[in-house]
Length: 112
Length: 112
Image 1 (cartoon, rainbow over the protein chains, first blue to last red):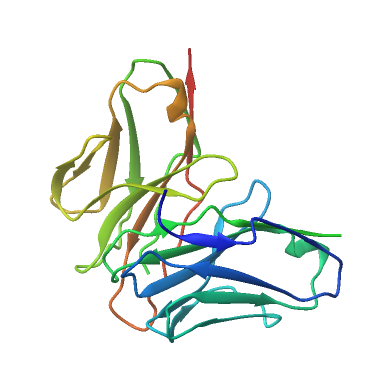
Image 2 (cartoon, rainbow over the protein chains, first blue to last red):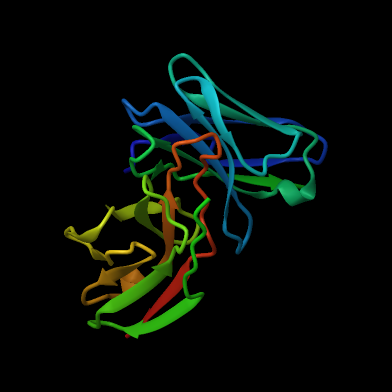
């Protein structure tokens, strides 16, 4: 158990809808990262937050947004969903920049 | 941003030692080298991290030459359960371009 909790585990929704994925980092970790992994694809970095502030942004679509709250949990909002957004979405956390990432078990999003 | 190059796939047999090499020619002074293991539909799991020379833990060893332009993950006496994708990451960069990029990884298949 990595200590990173992601909810929900599975999500099925229709095109055009909006969903929110939630991540609780390990206790004491200030950084939260979001990654997308499509079927048989690599991990695509979306965005990172550090202690509530956006730290780095990857190939995150404008339809997607994220935030980190004062209690350090994070939410990834996906809107105007398309079939191609179906993927595993992973959250990871770390204590500081040089520390290893600890990943949650992911949220599997299916857009129909 | 340091880019990494790994073999796409490797085959091995149970009980053998497996060495996976990662090239990172433009590694920066502040960069650490970190390896992760990922099973299907699971989040990556931290294996080992190093900065220079050799690091060993209960799972693997990491060899880093003096120029740090490459690194080798060594898995002793692999078993079937070591079949997974292995990712080499180099980072972070202590500047505004900081982001942790996973490459395509190395698919290791361990045969009986």
